[in-house]
Image 1 (tube, rainbow, N blue to C red):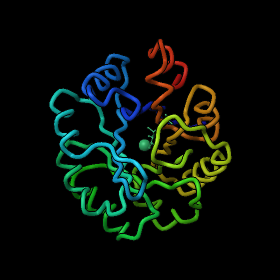
Image 2 (cartoon, rainbow, N blue to C red):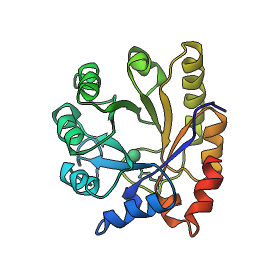
Image 3 (tube, rainbow, N blue to C red):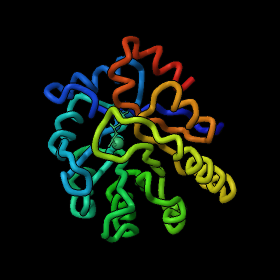
Image 4 (cartoon, protein in one colour):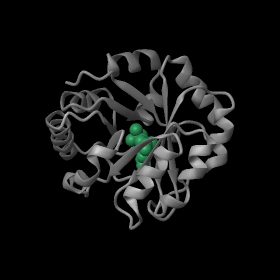
Length: 218
Ligand code: DX5
Ligand code: ZN
């Protein structure tokens, strides 16, 4: 387990897309502080979701911490728009060809926290050049693109490795997981040192969201 405060970041991908404001309100009323916003370009991933205007409009009525997960082939062209729209944290994938280091710095220069994301098929070693320069590392526990997929147990070792690396190097990045997180898989991730849990379907399908949240992050 980790000493960091455990955060649950519900993904509004699993909410009502005709009423995202309500999805955000549900998160606030549950007493949570973060919302996970999935941005997909139909290219890096085979699905499409929201753009910066969605974030601008959600920001008007929400003080939540906007955890923006960019699933884009060319994120460097969009970080400024997502920062200005009101994101608090912007995470970018390591897999596409673009200036990763420069984009991570750009996100911080824009006043946001930065995060780096790895897909299930990407090794933890590929993160080594960046671990000292990120506020968050996101380990995908499903192939990104869609909610409601099954958690990949074989990703647990990545969390363990990254947690050890964090301890060994006295680093402070948050360790987040995304995909197939429910009470069972969330606990397994926490046991390996994860401190930030994204949950889409499991959160929005829970009849009692307060008890779901309490059981997951207690
Ligand atoms: C998947 C997204 C996730 C998604 C998780 O590409 O990055 O954030 O919303 O959904 P669940 O929790 O349903 O797997
Ligand atoms: Zn996500």
